[in-house]
Length: 293
Image (cartoon, rainbow, N blue to C red):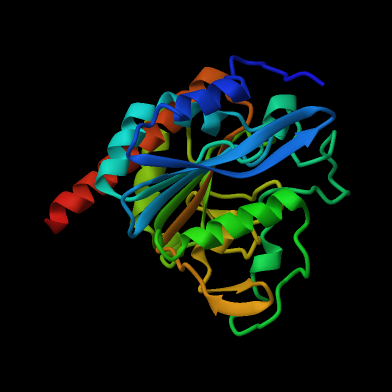
């Protein structure tokens, strides 16, 4: 099977080579390898040597959503600057095989509305039922990649507790505008989320002010009503997690955001919008640090 490079997207190897140029202030790590029919890629993570309350930036969870990974690769210089003002974790392409072959899920050739999609985003095995539950929402990880991703994230929480997390997605069926899932403590009152939605709007993309997502979740003023969707973002914002059958304190990120751009945007437009968002994140955190000083 060969990699499908469409719409100007970078090949997986080029994305990985781009992040190999971060420099000696960053540490690359292989989360695991993912493959299908002879096509095998590493799933990469990058962290600053500087530890502490951190920014997490993720993309490429769903294979047909190419804007975020390409925007991150094209924003390398800004990301380097981000890593100087706050400890940073980069997860630029979490589903490289899906990205390379334009498949949404791990090990599934075509998207299905009825069948369960196996995704690296499935964190049910690390999330409890309810606020005081001692049992995970799912006994085992949905797939090996999801298990390895959960283990990797949990390994980071002690030295890199998440302050803010940004996850870059596309809603492939959305035409009206962009919206955001806000999993952190502030929910729909999160000021950083509002500021970044304004960045998207200034980039020429309307904000979806009402209606619902493709999954039926209600949207109000650009924010999806709070849902426990068992995603990576849900894990990063969780007050408690389940790890190896034991309930533990969660990372409890103050701001945990998953952005959704309309999936039918022109490739170059979508990438540029997310480049603007990454730069906007840098500016917000830079100003925040200067204010504290």
